Amino acid sequence: MTPEDIAAFALTLPETTEDEPYGPNRPVFKVGGSIFAMLAAATKDHPEQVTFKCAPDLALHLCEQYPAVRPWYQGRRWHWLTVPLEDAMPAEELTDTLHHAWDCVVASLPRATRERLQKLSPEQQ
Image (cartoon, rainbow, N blue to C red; front, side, top):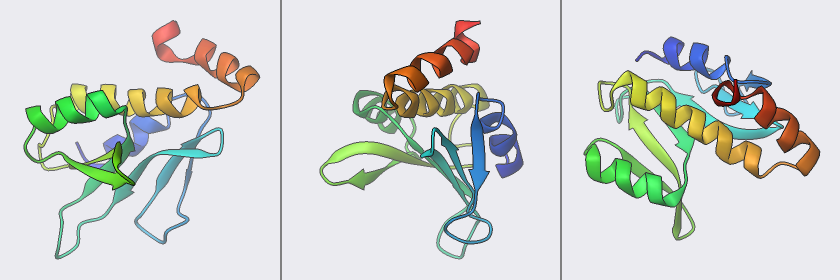
């Protein structure tokens, strides 16, 4: 998938917004004001990549299944994964995982917001 594919998919999720708080070519995708995914352009140190929020058990599974997928640590817990966009994961699994990231953030929002967004989720329709 390309960064444009990632952005296009992320923006199909209900009430997702795109911003560049970390500078140009580093868009983040938010729901309810919280980040669920971040894109990074290629540099001399890494290819184009996406980092997304992830439940620890799924993070462990994806790291075991795909060697290019790596954790982005926050303290001692795995809450974020980084995936190079050079065919590190099949496109369908990557979009499923991005939707999972959106769900993770929605689950942490205030109850009324969470319930409204869950009803709008493509999985609920």
